[in-house]
Image 1 (cartoon, rainbow, N blue to C red):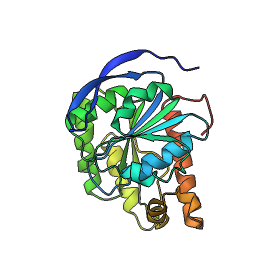
Image 2: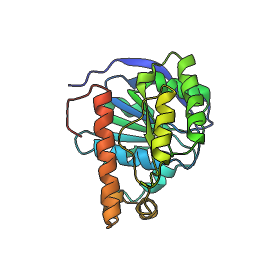
Image 3: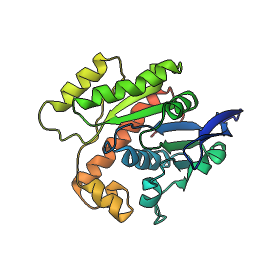
Length: 233
């Protein structure tokens, strides 16, 4: 059972400024936030929304002015609804929502998403720069009074070769960040999926199917982190 308690919050406008809208607090909301490009932010938003849609009525809000998520989903084959930033006004009509945030969001945008989302997902590739970039985002959340338990780092583009991923995990955890156990593998299947308007397991490769399973496990971790056991991912 989902209950709705409407509160006034600030959301993006088409100009990148904020306006005040009502958002339903009963909806399970994931905000995908990345201040660095090329970390798999939109890929993560698409695939987490798809997995949520297996058991919940789900909306993907494309908050990025480049509209990558909307372009990816424009063929209409996705199992979830897709809307632009105006979709925040209808979040309460859904059981789950995934917000693909603006690229390099402002401090105000990060703090707003942190306060009004169930969890923030912070994608990062396993490299040294990931630590400093993510700590800047976490510092914004700290200043906004958002508990670090509401944010989770997702390591993406993992080649599964060498020690880079383990080193990045150790550095991020040492900086006080929660790093999800599952990583998302690096595979060309994601590029084929994006260009074809498909989910990665529909590409027809074994790597694509394994990457799909990566996101299934990631979502399960996120639901457990949020204390949400109402449905199976």
